[in-house]
Image (cartoon, rainbow, N blue to C red; front, side, top):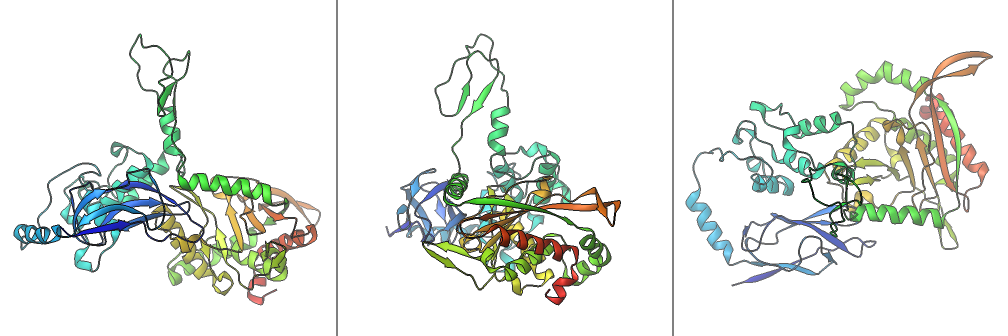
Length: 450
């Protein structure tokens, strides 16, 4: 018996520990090289730990929910079992592909799901949708259903022969009227009212799970632990409030010139670049114009020093199934409008699919938060330390404004710039926000670098 230890991989410098989310294999089961064994959650991302060798999972040292550190042994693999695995695979191999037995739910698709999550070496290794029976839930869709706490019966399959795809899950989730947020599962569980047998006293259960409130009938509460990401976000927000002298300045911007550009060139832009022309790229460009004019807004405090950054790494706040994440667009000042749109689209997809890496989330000199996509009219965004400022953008709505003594209707957007007053004076903050306003109201400035 040749035993190989499975260890927690090296985490980033700022991450000291992680949580084992879910083992995908049980002790005694066979594993393939690079097959995902367990999901590991840090305060930034969820990592997949591939098997370092083929064989049999001899033992699981750390179970789901355990706290672990880099280099810690969490399981062992009997690599001698790899030979038997190879023999059995050869014996059962067939010259032509055959469809697997019909199953329902993510459990029956565990092997296919694992393969999909760990990647493939070549096109021939990719699962063919034709291999799945009619009405089956595809692996990516099954994984999303499980993450969102949905029921398969809520999703109508529109794929070939009624197969349920990831897009079907997204449509079903959107139809529920909720946005992607990790605590939705807790909210749903807390508000569900299971039937209680008559005569059952309304007393606390004493468990850490579902509890019945005194004097209530079918009124339950569900206690769930915070995810590591949610706990880290909470910690960072408190840290921001306690360590910065945060102040917010506001301005309004007439979005008509930008909307006219989108209306005129949007279709041609999409044909040329393969991505929609959104609004966020204009806000990113306007912010960079302001940061170049007022470098202090792009700076940060390190002890008693002011660090002026000669680059512009812009963080974009994105709502993901696990909660709010802020992936970074590095050297955004060197990107074109099309490149910015493509990068935002790429980061959004990675966030929804849980594929963001530590590198995607590390660093940043300035952040942008768009509460407008959820309908927010006005807010005061919280600074993301060690950054010194953050731009909040909101819903664009038609409002009456005065132009040349006349009341006219214009699509207006309220901008909010929160800044650390320890470093940035009100003058620089107000003028930086005004620069953003002027750039958005006259996009030609972007071409002329004005």
